[in-house]
Length: 488
Length: 95
Image 1 (cartoon, each protein chain N blue to C red):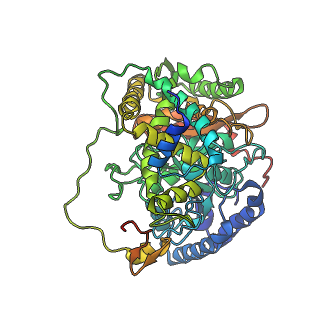
Image 2 (image 1 turned 45 degrees about the horizontal axis):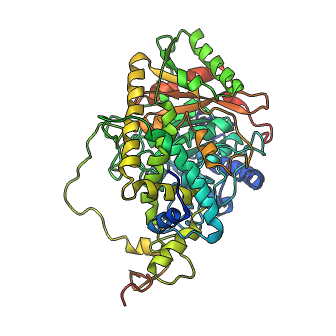
Image 3 (image 1 turned 60 degrees about the vertical axis):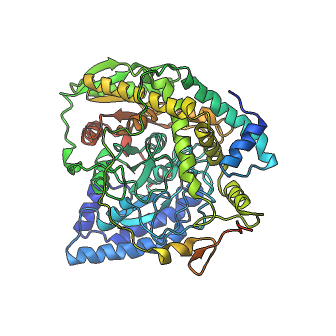
């Protein structure tokens, strides 16, 4: 069952071909076997018993006859989701020993559905990174090539699904953190429209950009997860009240009537030729199915990365001020006074990348610089959003590469943060505009590394995105390939 | 603009982050690289453009003006580094 889809798992559990305890144990055994090498889970031995206990509860629930489609299905969570009574580290020394007193909204929803919390996945510290190398718990390795990064910041969830250590996983996406690791690891990742999924109980990074998003082997599985996650929650002040959709039942999209936009800027210089070739082949498939291709421009694309690296650090510097060594988390052992306690606690508790972003954020918000940086960035953010609004008058969906390159080697970009940041050029625009976007596998380069196709749509067009991806996956098998280094 | 060591010390003090002597050269060099990237957006003319703080054109939701939070002290204090008699302990701030 390690390679089964959500639908297959639900069917097997319903038909009692397998119990949730047996199924959960299969995945736990695979985690125990592979995690020493891949490091996709943080301290899996500490969550193992809870997983089996939840699996037993799911089996009892099924025996009582009130099971839903996800009852008994194991789900892995990025360690940014607060999970009651369990460690929630956010990949940081600051929260190394933090045990959450409550559950995130999304965790509650999966618990209500009867899903099993399989474990907590590794991630870049406080979700700041694109390679999963900034984790206090060590880097995650890409199952397609262990010398390479799985992407980030949801590197653990993506590697876990790719290596079939979890059937599905939950990540978060601030500037591309579900889609970029999905592309690098050969799996599917969705960033929902800002406001569709509650942020309650996610450790906050940049609040105007953060969204929870699923990672899975197929678009159909993403839809099944989104059905559980999406919905209004009054505890998140930006949660949007709107009628609930049924994403799993909207997958059979008509491609023939679809207008697909190709932004010139997404196929420009810097795009690896083999990534371009794979994405163009996917575009050709849509065309062969009768989709109409529209060439268009998103002229402010080149400003997305600089704007993001003002807005996200500014919001992070404010959000992360809560880590003061008083109410929770790390506190320095030695200090002279209160201010010294704050400074040493934060100096010790945060890693280099997190400190750098807090410093950038503090600088751009400081007296005399606010207008020149933060306000200026918010204005360009509107220009970027307007580019998309104009584009979606001419097309239904925008296609392009998720990343300019395939997965890079561990350590290749750790000495130059800007090189790391520029790799996120295609994933950053959607969050700035609040738009939904997903990444699905669309081929491999000559080294055998997966290539991601990104599909972006207007606000609340998740059903259309998932439908377009699902139809492609019915005709191709890129998403079904299993990494050669982690055979079944 | 490019930062000097004094600027980094000032920003780090505002951010309440201790930067060790060993870290400081690298922090300065990498911060300046990031600021050089950010400079690219400052040349754009944005006159007449409204800043965008929220991506959906919706107003802030209001709630009924009544107390909804209950007392979570027993739940929240066990994870604090130092508490005594229901109080969070911090170093002495008043002489």
